Amino acid sequence: MPRRVIRTLAILSITQILDWAFLYYAFALWAPRIMEETGWSGTLVFGGYSLSLFVTGLASPFAGRLVDRHGGRLVMAAGTLVGALGLVVLALSHTEVLYFSAFALIGLGMAGALYDPAFATLTQVSGPHARRAISTLTLAGGFASTLSWPLTLLLFGWFDWRMIALIYAAILTLICAPLHLFVLPTAAERARAQTNPLPHSDTSQTLQEKRAQ
Image 1 (cartoon, helix red, strand yellow):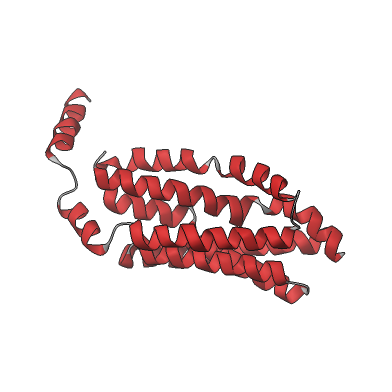
Image 2 (cartoon, rainbow, N blue to C red):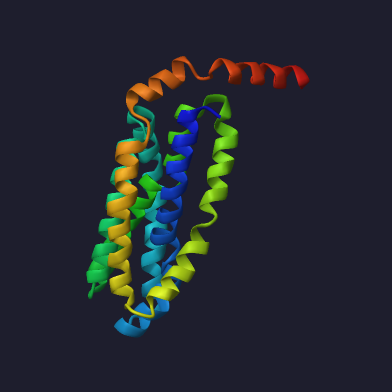
């Protein structure tokens, strides 16, 4: 694959693992501790998580249109920061209103930072390599739970779920958001990818594959 595709794929692989790990998977281990600390019912606690998924579904088409118009840099950076803000609000929530507000923010963040905008961003620079690049990114994202659950259980040895949410928010803010904003392809790079999608060697390889078919 061309170098620009490899670079974009590498960055998105890192950020997808972290975004999925902290915005999506960690709640499975937080939920029992949230119920124990707050005394809230399971219906209320899991209702917040369900709200985040509902908001993600509503906001995803809008996020996709923004990626089509402006590329993934700003959209995915903003989505990551909104998700991190949701984790901060979650860590500070002692009322049901704040709790559900936190998950609404997390849902917005997931709409702008998880697979859908990542696939669109990758496709803009991948051209005929898009299928293989997306498959590779999906495989990388599958390691999110492998990171999230052991790491969260490890951190429970020192911190409560609120502090862990703040730690994860800091990681998203200091690592994922800058990678999205400063390393993902610029508008000029996307334009070059569309006008010259393949270097000569890749073009020859693609022609050979078509002939073989």
